[in-house]
Image (tube, rainbow, N blue to C red; front, side, top):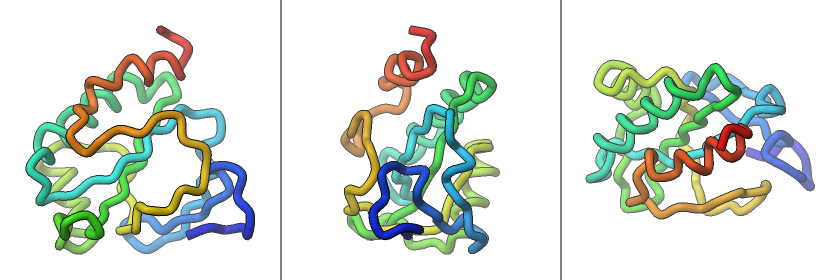
Length: 136
């Protein structure tokens, strides 16, 4: 996943999108990023996908991006293919934010502003998003 041997920030990584294409995360420099693990079979997925879509719609024009990374690692709650995950997110939850290929989430490289539990409602972190956008 890393594009350099000693990354200093998330912008130093290149990752695969859901279609298998390389995405250099430096394209997100200057944006406020919410990097989130998603799982279709997680009990909270309906509300989380819905609230992620609400946050994205509300702040995308102010420099806010959501980078969603499906992961099977935590309780095997994401059995679908990357294409199936994108289809579900787009059709059922109207997600327009970027959904990447499946990853393992236990890597700690990069600078993290906040960490939240899987049960944290995306709307509950809206203040953090606004603060980072400079509108709080």
